[in-house]
Image 1 (cartoon, helix red, strand yellow):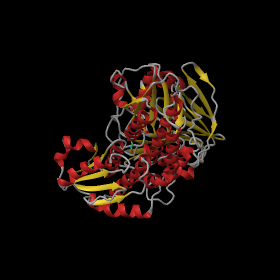
Image 2 (spheres, protein in one colour):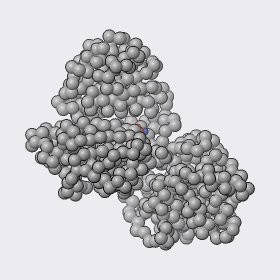
Image 3 (cartoon, protein in one colour):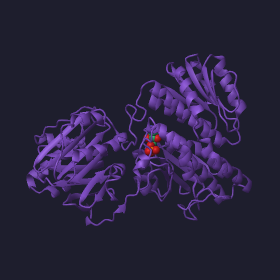
Image 4 (cartoon, protein in one colour):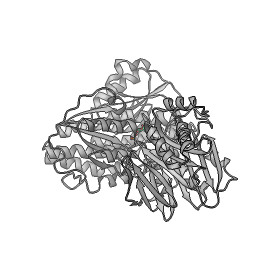
Length: 602
Ligand code: M6R
């Protein structure tokens, strides 16, 4: 949610900022802006909408010589996506960019307004720059003024500030929103995640909550509440090539096709011949644990729901799943025998992170399942299992969901092993199925073409129901979410057996039903549920290994021996269906309206 970049050094700053923002655009694309100070000259540019608008606006500008610079791509929280609300925000002689929410901004704003400050925007961020100038005007000393400013802020922030009062310094602070510092010789970079600095910085330092400071002459001066502190950098090893589109039309498409490969990586070293191993977990990690609670949001929540069936069925451990934003405010009853699991692609989702902090305060053991190493959720957890999906850029999550579900399936078996609830035969069958998963995820041209063709029928109508039973119910929820996010069509996931308790009233030929009909799980039951809908004229797209005459459209899947293989194969079908419908509607698949890749505000 919002991306920030900063650079201090001799290179052309506009390009560095724009390239960095391009990498972060998935975090928000309501507006973008940059500010540069070279010598004593200040330049700033802002544009609403996607980054290409800012690129166009800055075409004629080139920054030459040593200087300092900051940039921002916005996902609007306070104030509409207008140019005035775009960052960087200007005071009288300073600029600020910010990711997060200043919770006490109204109080600060009133204080400043009473002292005669005029605000140009409706954002919470603008208070930072005016507060800084208020303190600087009194002390004439920039760092103490910045330090005083930071101490007044409540809420989440990653912020960069530059000022004509100190034209060779970038001030920074982090609390609750991600930010790292990158280094290459005497050049220093800032970014919300490592993708903007890959290929530029060789070493990075991931700032911790409560840290702040400034960069001057290539040196970072770092502080926290106890004063000045030292830090150790780490080598940046990620491979940028892997984050490009590789000839696919969209990142989402590339990520759907990648699922087969990344799944093998998720299993590597963990799925052994006759056992599941997690080096990440201490031998006695599950000692004293008799229940599991999982918290997550969006797609990650759907993988959690899937796993609840598996934990109870395979490991015989009670498992509850909660939406993180609900969990936070319900005064949950937490007992020490409960393992608290959070699931997150980004590791930065504010609601999930706060739920984790609550569980920790209650003394629960915590485990995160996450795709981003060093993310806030990983660092906050007692243990973490990385999903190894690689960088996911499409806002609509695909390979993250697949790998999360795989990790959870493995974990259910692992817990079963630890608690002695799975027999050798079951372990063998499950492992055999796991090893087939990469094959079940292969996208064939035939399938993709068929979905492209039949997607034409599904562009108009009054809504979609994705229906399934058991683990195929969370998959139905996920299929509906994918479609909603990128097609803007109304879709609901529903337990198939529940349709007759109300929603079937909506059935007519304009109601599209996507029926997940696995052979290995309650086939006859779901078949009657679909027949009931068909009898009421609903248009049916059936996905099943079993031919189904009543379907208006039919996708025949190939796996019919294990529910999880059917699950993964059907997952791919629903992802491609959403993609093809979105493309036909002319939508921006990778950056759907109103969304951002990681939601770091509550
Ligand atoms: O990074 P997280 O997994 O914590 O994100 C949770 C949700 O915001 C995310 O899954 C969202 O629902 C996606 N846009 C789904 O495609």
